[in-house]
Image 1: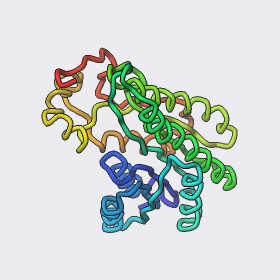
Image 2: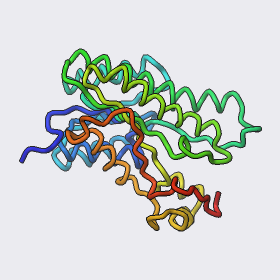
Image 3: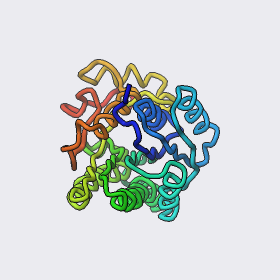
Image 4: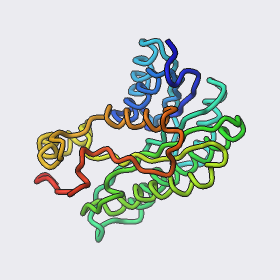
Length: 258
């Protein structure tokens, strides 16, 4: 039976950890060949690739520091070399630094912007050049955050990077629309993952208590939203941010742990 993304090639950045891994595995399950990009996490990325291959999918891991422009260009070139084309970019790689505004320093600011904003911008640029050369359109999706929608104390610099990704989706959608390329963002809310559990052992309970759906988000919730935005059914959706937060941004209460 033909799957919705058979014959497509996807690049997923930040694919060695929970959300990115779920994205890579979900796209592969629906027919994509996947280049799973990571930075210095070869063992984790190999595990993701092995899971995809065990289910009959195609995947390859690729190590890249996406804060560097040339690394983004090489990432796309590698996908073309191995799989022949690029149809989907899930620009998911990013990092979080928590610090009060008055204590945020230049190094923290530069670290956040070099990966979250600069890396996503030039990954999209490299992918778009390839998609335009192919002449068959494409899909670009950025991993933004609810911190780019609602202000959260202690996450000023991080939230600004995520707001930038929302606006990036809008501006690139205008410029790339004539080429049949859609550009959207995911407004990711509280997600149960390793980092959040380490920061707060009761993370699930704390965030479930302030979320209208009564539960915390899971990596697969984000992966399914990505799947929709790159599916044939979303061909006329572009420049949008799809918020995956169980309704939290409707009122935005902070849990006791914050």
